Length: 318
Image (cartoon, rainbow, N blue to C red):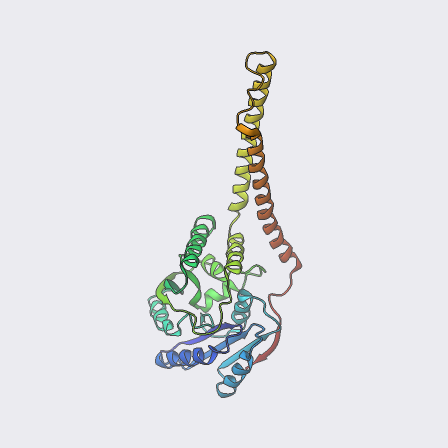
C-alpha cells in the first residue's frame, strides 16, 4: 500500500497499555505494507512510568515520537497537540487504552480507497454498565437535535482522515475544543465503520460520569445556541402566564370588593398552598437554571478572551 500515516495517541497513566498498543499498531501497519509512518504519543502529564516506557520504545524505533506535556491539559488539548505536530498524508486518531482497536485501520483505508475523506469508528456495542449507556444515548440525542451539525450516534475521536481535512481543522483557534464536532463541521465526504468497543485492557477509566457530563455539555455549548433560545422562549412564555395570572388576580379581587363573589375566592389550594407559591417555585427554578446556562456561555467567552495556549510542551522526543 503506497500510503503514509500518522497515528495520534494521547496517553495519561497508560503504562500497562502502551507496549501492547504499540505492537498491535506496528503489526497492522506491516500487514498493510505501510513503511512510511509515525506513531505520535502525547504524554499528558502522566504520573506513572508511561513516559519512561515510551522513551524505551523510541530508542528502538525512531518512528515513535513523543510529545511530553507539562501537565494534564485534558484529552482534547492533547489530541490537538498531536494533530499540530503530525506530518503524514493520512492521520489516524485513537485512544491509548486499547478500546479503539488498531486493526480497524485496515477497514478505514478500505473506505478511504472508496473515495471518502474521513472514516470514523461507530461503537456498535460498548462494554459499559447500563446506566452509562443510557447517559451516552441521552447525550447523542441532545447533540443531534440541539446542535448545528449532524454527528452520528456513538462516534468518538477514533478516525482516519486525509491531510486536507486536518488542515481545515487546524485553522480553528478556539480554546473550547470538541474535535469530533469540528471534524463533522468542516464537511468533506465522511462515513463510518461499525465495531464492537471492548473493555479497557488495563488501568482505570479517565472519564467518570461527572467529567463525562461536563465534556458533553462543553461539546453542546460549542456547537449550539439553542439552549439560549430555549431560555428566551420559556422566559417569554412564563412572562405571558404571569401577566394572565396577574390579570386573573386583579379581576377576582375586583369582583370580591364589589361583593359579586366571596372574599375567600383566591384560596384555590388547601393549607395555604396557592397558585402564587407554585408559580414562584417554578419561576425561581427556571431563573437558577437559566443563569447556569448563561454562565456556561460566558465562561467560554472568558476562556477565549484570555487566549492562553491549548497546551505546553515540556519535551519533544523524535
